Each structure stands twice: as structure tokens, then as C-alpha cells.
Image: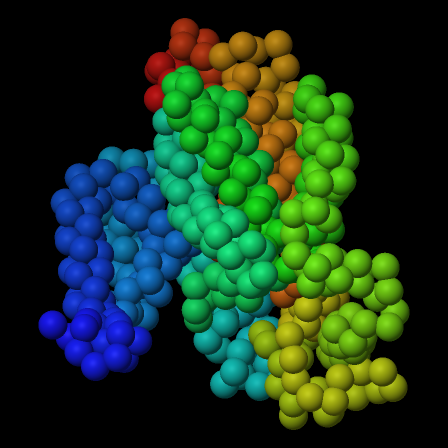
Length: 463
């Protein structure tokens, strides 16, 4: 009995050390069994592969195991299998033209040029590869999420994948009294507490959309509890930027929802209750927002922004390439009073894109985000007076809240190419395509450039 041998503490430690390898093997085998179980479903229905691809990209289950699957490129395998199954299937192969998808592909090409002429191509290459994989996944969402059922499945997959860390982080904060920071999975884009906080804020409106559209009372209650734990997890990240983004999301939601006054009242009550619930070190951290001029962290961000601007000013078309501002050698080449003296993150979506892809790249990126916002307003216009499209209107409004939260919180975080955010943008293009589908019995009105015959085509039933 190892647990009781020697002193109780040493016995517990030995028991834990013996148990950890066994748990690691069990976790790996469980994940492997799930993946093997999914493979036949992907071969039969490529859309299942898209859902699995999203799950692996956002949740990173290979970071939650500690055995032979730890760090395995599962998303690459799933992407390849999904692509093969999709090419062999009868699903449509064309990308529906949309301003967002066009600008996304233009930005991918621009980022490729920027990487080829990067100041430090060796360090730029890994992030370029990751970003291109994300671009392909984003395009896959716009192609395959072409019905209401599929759209719901994608939103649920995003919610479950990120909601795992939301519920886990919220429970950790409650059990620990909020004294420890909440972090994301290691070696991922949301490992940092600030990045995790922003990702969870982008998730919140999607959870609320699922709550609004779920038919079962038990499901709605579970989603409401998940929303509460997500808010607690966001506070538990100790991220000041996340707190600002949460406030921006609440304000936009109050303006875009009929429940606006209730949201404002709840926000006021939460502000009054928080001082008595959260620990003193959390309050000290959040109160430092008022004194950003004297905050070393904020001054470091200003220095990173200056360096990013210096790189873009010297190379206005292509910038310095991915992670240029994080390389000390590059930073020293573009130093100026108040800029960085050693490499560090850009700490801003806008300055990240500016320094890495130049002024032209930033213009393309912002145009892409603007196109996603325009998509949501176009969906609202199409759905007006259409009870059958009421769900698209609800989702469009929640996507608007997610995008606004990202734009607010991203001002101080380097998350321009995060999978979860680009998928939110992709949902706007897919949702617009669904809203445009004619109702049963209506004639399908095609754009002029697609008309090859003077005879209109009768559309089939939705779904």
C-alpha cells in the first residue's frame, strides 16, 4: 500500500506519481478511441470532419493528454481526411462569392508575400503555416455550413470546445476564491490569461444565442449556468483588457437586444457585488486601469506599438513579416525613443497586423472585418418580416456582439489570426448565404454573372 508507506504526505506523493502515468495512458486511449470512432462518420459525411476539425483546433484535446498523443498534429490529419471525403462527396465544391471570403483570400496571399520577404523568415514561417491552416478551416466553414442544421452544429461545436475551458475556469475560480489566475491550455494561442479572457468573451454571445434558440428548458438552464461560469472565468483571468472587452460586449448587447435595460441593471448590480466577492489583489489589479500612464505593462505595450509602427513606416507595403516585433534583432534595427529594446508581442491586433503585413495588409484585414459586420446587417435586412428566418436575425445580432468585443479587447492583445475569431467572421458569410436561400416553392433568383440560361431554376426545400 504505497499511499500509507512512510509519512502520509510522502505516501500521497508517491501514489500520485504512480497514478499520473496510468491516467495519461487512459486519457490518450480515450482520445484515440474517439478519433477512430469519428473516422467512419467523416468518410460518410464530410461535414462531420469539419466539426471534428473545429473541435480539435479550438479545444486542443491533444494538450489535455500527457502520453503519446500529446502535441500530435490532430488537426492536420482531420483536415486531410475531411478534404479527401469532401472531394469524393456530392457536396458543392464552389465557394459562394462574398466580400469576406474574397478579402480573406486576398489577405492570405498578402501574408504569404510578407512572409517571403520577411525580415526574419525562419521565425515567420511557423506562424504563417498555422495561419494558412486557419484560413483553410475558415473557408471550409463558409462552404459546408450551408443549412440551418449545419449552422447550429458549428455553433454548438464552438460552444462546447471553448466552453470546456470556460466551465473549468469558472469552477476553478469559485473553488479557489478567485485568488489564482485562470490560464488556457499550454502551447496554444489562448494559453495566456489575457488571450483566454478575450476568447471567452467572444464565446459568450454564441452561448446566449444557443440559449435563446434551444427548445428544451433543461438545455436553456444548462446554457445559462455555462454563461455564468464563463463570466466568472473571465474575471478569474485577472485580465484588465478582458474586463474592458466584457464591458463593451455588455454595452453592445444592451443596444442590440430588447433585454437591454435588464442587462444594464444586471451590470450595475454586478459592479456593486464584485468588491465583496473577489479578493483584494483582483480589485487592485482592476483598479490600476485608471492609472495606465504609470503602469509598466501599459508602457511596454506603447513601446511595442511604436516599434510595430516603425517597421510599417520603413516597409509600408509588406511590413516585417510574422512575429517581426518579437525578434530582438529586428527590434534593434527599428528602434526609436520610447520603442522596444528587446523583442516582445505586439499586444494589439491592429499594430500586430500593421507591423507584420504593412499598411496595405492592415487595410485588407480591417476591410475583411468590416465585410463580416456588413454581412450581419444584410442578414438582418433579409430576415425582417420573415418568421422563418427569425433565428438568423438572432444569430446575426450575437455575432455583432462577438465582433465588437473582439475589436475592443483586441486593441491590447495579439490575436489577429486566432481560429475562434476567424470562425466567427466565417459564420457571418455562411449565415448570409443561408438567409438568401429561397423558400420552398419560390424561384431562385441568381446573380447575372451566374445565369447561363434564360430559364429560372426552381429551388428545392431548405436543408
